[in-house]
Image (cartoon, rainbow, N blue to C red; front, top):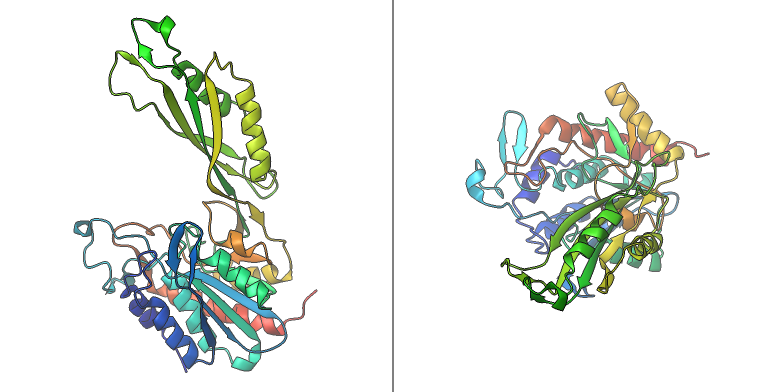
Length: 384
């Protein structure tokens, strides 16, 4: 049974699956996967301070090496639709492109992989799909719990591909072999409120807050590593919620984010922040530091024969060995990396999250061919 990736992508776009609403996208995938021989399990998760999420796990084949594909059907909201040429949840094809929310990020990757699986005989090997509807928001009841469930139920894998947009300029010019971590923090400096005409009766937290900002932003974290750029700390807000000019505020807050490489962990970064705060003269104020949210850990997949095979497939198509990248933000690959090697391999994505989000149809069919070629080699070529 052949599957047209363009048709499947169009039908997925028609499902307005803004996080966490599944909106029929997983129902559609379940029907398509079962039609080509996959066994499908739906895995709803909830709790841990977040909304309930429906997830999908599918598997076909038995024994031998196991290949995992992971992705997400949820999309970001379309924003003000006045900026769209047409309805963001009605697929539009024009000038060799298909338009719609999720076209690039990342319903196209899912459509390409499912279509590739349809071209692979079921007896070729074990293929698994882990699809969530919670990547674009909290990411609490999605991939992290899904891969944990897989591990607890003996659904291990030898290699994983996440179908996020990973190409830079042209299809296949780059794959992501790792990602930087993300660590956010909040610092509160508390003094004593008072009248600006009587500063001796108050204790202004703002000079201390300014010193904290300087202490955090002027010391370099590192110089980078073999596969990662230097870690960077960015101040994102300083706020005292004081709308008037004749009151010394009681407290102020500073927020920051660190994108970090494989030299650091959330624990070591927290220690580094505390060391920097200790260097600041508190001037009688109280300085409190707290980690915001759950930090994302950095990861780097071990280079090996499967990445070599994928690289060879891409090089044969493009005429050039792809760049191995760790750039960009975080992705659900960080959860998968805790259980086995994973890379991100997908389309070019400059339009993702924008109005009139789109991809080139030729890239979609090309990605389908890339996935199918890799799957065949994954199961047939010998491993070192």
